[in-house]
Image 1 (tube, rainbow, N blue to C red):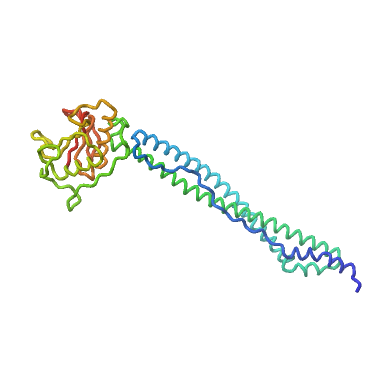
Image 2: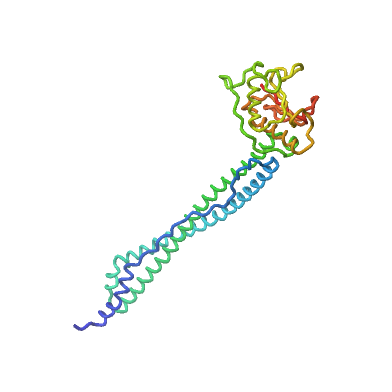
Length: 340
């Protein structure tokens, strides 16, 4: 059978028609969340660190966390601009892609064969094939561009959410570091009392028994004083045992007869810096012993039922904190503790 020119042209263009009928749109890229803006993490305090070391380390972590928050804020501003630009591009592309898709539906994909074969001559067929190819190429290009804009919006929003979350974590670290430094200073009366020379994390004491209302009832001098031939209250004896358990084993005297205040009532103890007797500190080791003992008592004051602590010309009350002390003794040779 003789094949005419029109038929030969149709057969030659058949692969092109088939290819155009099955042009697939670009697949949208998947958005992956961005990395965190900061690696500032709160480090655990060294149990043997001095107060001055803790204050320095907390300040360093505070500065690092603050820098991370600043960087995160800048990243958020950049991401907000990127999202706004991508959303504007998306809004422009959506109607364009919709219009091209409409043309493609009318002249391409679903009716490509009929559209091409319904040609008056070979020249008209070729023109239609070229126009169909252009429509599909334009559709693919715009669709890829739209997908990229959508991906940018989605990915930037995920990154922005991550930045906001990380910034909150960094802000929390800042707050904790500030509170930690302030608490450490407040509990031991600031550097004026200890000169920063004190263990930063004292052991926890076992709490003293309380009454049914959760408070501390008055107690009589009913227990044998392990330091003298006198007596102490149950609460004072409990405090004495907890201090010993914490490792403070230098000389101590509790009950004594005569005089005002708590000693004759069995509600006070004087903890020396020496193995025997009392004398002012003249070495760093002795000064640190007094600091550490004072810190243990103050930090466990609520649990033990402590009334007040005196050390190194300062007096501490649970309700008012540290004040200058101007009593007969400067308390530079021992730590005094009175119980409720």
